Image 1 (tube, rainbow, N blue to C red):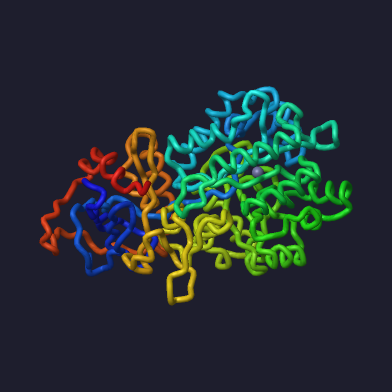
Image 2 (cartoon, rainbow, N blue to C red):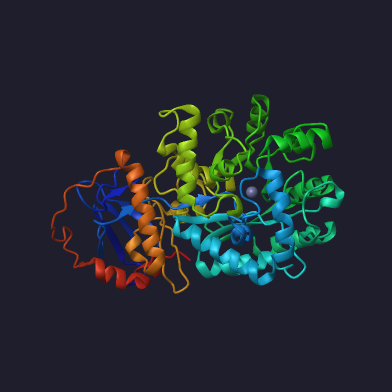
Amino acid sequence: MSSSQRLWLRDPIAVLAEGAERGLIVSDGVIVELVGATGPQSTYDLVFDASRHVIIPGLVNAHHHFFQTLTRTHPRAINKKLFPWLQTLYPIWGRELTRDAFRLAVRVALAELLMSGCTTTTNHLFVFPADMPDAVDIEVEEARALGIRIALTCGAIDLGFEEGGIADRRLMQDHDTVLADCERVLSLYHDPQPGSFTTLALAPCAPFNVTRPMMVETAALAAKHDRRLHTHLAETEDENDYCRQQFRCTPVEYLEDCGWLSNRTWLAHGVHFNEDEMRLLGGHGVSVCHCPTSNMLLASGTCRTVELEASAVSVGLGVDGSASNDSSNMMEAVRHAMLMGKLRYGAEAVTHLDALRWGTRGSADVLGRFLLDDLRFSGAGDPLVRGPQRRPGDGRRTLACRRWPTGRYRSRTAPIDAWRGRQGLSLGSVACTRYQSGQIASKTRRSLLIFRLLLWPRWVPTPPRRTRSNPNGSGHRQISHDEGTARAPELLASLNVQ
Ligand SMILES: [Zn+2]
């Protein structure tokens, strides 16, 4: 199958898109038609019978710490809130985190994210033991090998236990080394092109782990290079107390004082804001990544998602580090966000579509990569990663890709993401799980089944199956489930956009 051949993903059980009751047609790595109830309006060359599949957007993870993957459910750290949890784990990370362990942790985290339907992720990296000054480079290698889009961050901790912080000195770099390495990786890896697979932001860990000069100079460096900024903020009441004691202000006031209040900043957690602070953040275009699973595990509190959005703060979703999540399951994060939202605001106030919106368009917005009008295939799909673009004339934020100006795509079309495995396997934001093989496919199918049950009432029902001849007479042939599975690498390689 050549990349220009048009493949109809026909008659899925359900699809999270209006006007796509009978599936999608993809060509050259992009969705070129949402197939409505009357069937395709354009030609196609191949058919994949998707009648045993569901189609969902790829999910976007806006906060994680890959290095924590190997210390999840650590017996000494369980049943603790944030500060004692960190005080328990920092010495373990300082002692055990080696270069090889880090690479393995990154690989596991990325694989788990992919298996849970996540096709774009960030990683908040702030630990740099002596033998891994190239930690960011390792992340790039692993992400490229798996084919996931990654919004890397280069962070730091420089306030150790001896200076009144809680971090382990063995994980730190000195101030000059941190800033020099930020400059190095920015120049090496940040690709500003729409649809790029690698971007890079700057991300000191948190006010209680980083000195004030580091916060200030990182913000200046981000402004100089026009890059995004990320840190933890207002995760717990303990953090608020720490800021009041150390800085005589709230975390948000401290952030403002360090020059961080701008639309380049996204914050992890944002649990303990008051109304004035939320309005201040919204007014500056600061966004928040809600991490429901971590917040529950550490009993940190509940992110006030509804009030944040009402204050014009963009809300995305993240799994947070595996040590405070016990997994890297982005689908689980969506579900937990929905459940926490319902618990706080009521059954009708936060819906499954709200949670999905946060985990797709919201996270994309938080990462500054793309803007969308509505859900559709807004996850980690290429439309998202290919970047935002206003559709000429309609004045609305809309899905776009680099080919948009050609007029080839309608407003309801969306490029398809590609999820490429080590052997060239792919699974796009069009998550036709049979495309994958082996364990990943099995686990993904399970996740999608759960997700389908979660979303069923609002999903577009598929018409009864029928046997159809080619309505276009274009000589296409149908491929079976088995053939589709066997030919997965070939078919999906053709969907890869880069
Ligand atoms: Zn975190």
